[in-house]
Length: 326
Picture 1 (cartoon, rainbow, N blue to C red):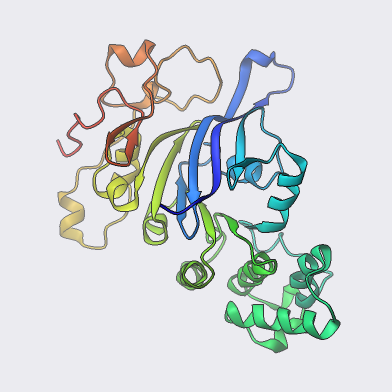
Picture 2 (tube, rainbow, N blue to C red):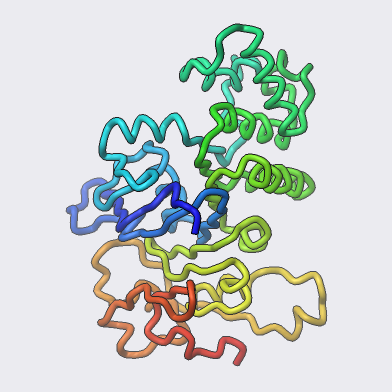
């Protein structure tokens, strides 16, 4: 077993609505736990608003958790020295390539900024060589260094963002839906760039997305989030081919299949009811209101995220006992 670069234990983050009592808090993260080993990619999936981005931002120390702990190589980042070390050894690729790059800076300065902050060069020539090497890593030319972000396409801008993330040779990278703002024709290029990145640099990677087809392609393991909680986590193929939680089955049934015959044979699972967002909704299972397989016990007793088979955990009272094909 490889060492866990990042470990999250019972992480919590709540946001409070204006002019509302604190009992009406929105749970962005409500007891999240997972770990990511060196060279591993963990896909974090779920619908918009489930808390995926909030988790990534807490790992990058952009948000302060309301509870739980984040460990970097076994040490809590609540220790200032450890937190500062993680800031130097972690990086983030943002969702929007149009707003995440400063339009007043050249590509050279954008990529070189992390090098400047952490003083990772001894001369201007060494700085320039590192920047040009990073551009080559993501498939851009050296001549691009003197240009500004508005001179590039969306896919090229996202490559610049990836090059910036690689500048400090990070051990941990958060990719927050890096392809959602791009054209379909460009997404494959960015995904392949990230896969090559994982193969050559071997960082621990948290890949946040709502697109399960992309996550399956790039991830070693997948964690499925719903309303601030992880409801299922396992190897990528296990989650996609053998879902144990009804919400995961709903997501999987919504994926497009290019083969018309297979698409016609597949049963689409439609959730019922409305999405809840607030803490203290009065139900045991957070998916109770929308679950087509709910029973009386689900209303009052919250299920634990327990191991059903080797490495496959799900938070459902009937995990492994529901036939989603019927």
